[in-house]
Length: 225
Length: 218
Image (tube, rainbow over all chains, first blue to last red; front, side):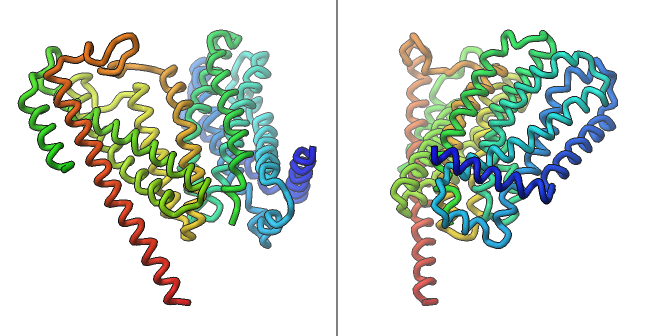
């Protein structure tokens, strides 16, 4: 119980800070939209061909915006030695990890909730009724991204050139998530339901569960100074 | 010792052993290709063991082991990919293809190159050791998932030559081919341990220099 309380408290702290500053959310949202424009200019395809590429393009946009958010994730803690203060307090490190992951998840969730419909509008796509299912799959993938991303963001925290290093260590490890979400979304868009892609969905769920557990257990090793 | 056994293995594999019935002389690359990927897998397993032990006991030697194994592993993986593309060009007609096992090997190379970069970019040694150990464990845990996903994605590579379910190893390959292969596997493992011990000595020496510098400055 104490663990949940600590997590919520830390999450509330981050949300409050974000509400006052709006650094991450605005930049991520703007960057996501910008990417859609860049994609549109670089491909310039008719709507039926765009439909084939939609899952891949969407996930590229989410990966890039997500990485942008992750590099900022511990920025507040770096200022004024807040991280040291947090580590001195009798908090469970697992709670710190979970709060940070949830915070990043919430940011990405908000960005995705706007970028996905925008994609449908900008590229004149059909099949609005599939959007909730696609969004659900995206959400599962985003959980995996945020969980592993939070660990990697903490790992690279004290490295030189950490903004550059983060995607280098994160992306190869993210390949199961990228493959699974894109295959699931493709199946939904072509067949209208998950059907044969169930095993991909299970892989995605397995990934999420494994790395949430690993993160909670190992975060004190990552973050200690 | 390692050099001698490699020489024997290579001579046997490249000169004495008969060429493959379908692929001809090119197939001889197998005598290098298979041993080097086995050596790479073994070294990544050692990274995992070293990382786990370091997180548990916090001893310098485990960290040096993990670091050395990662470096040697990257070397062997790169070798495997190069040999593989030389083999792939005449048999498949391309240098590279997005087959599951090729992709997995390339991803392994990327993960452990990332691991080495992470280590080189953190100045505080203890801090680097600790976060690299976490990355070593996570990277290893991720391998089965990557393996599954790329296999579902696509497969073209020939199935494993020797270890197959329902069949004893010696039924899949003729003796004249198996003997040099086994010699080469043994030779590459010896080479792996030789390189590893060299690299490990280097890590120990670096540590000694570091402590001596600290003592002097105190």
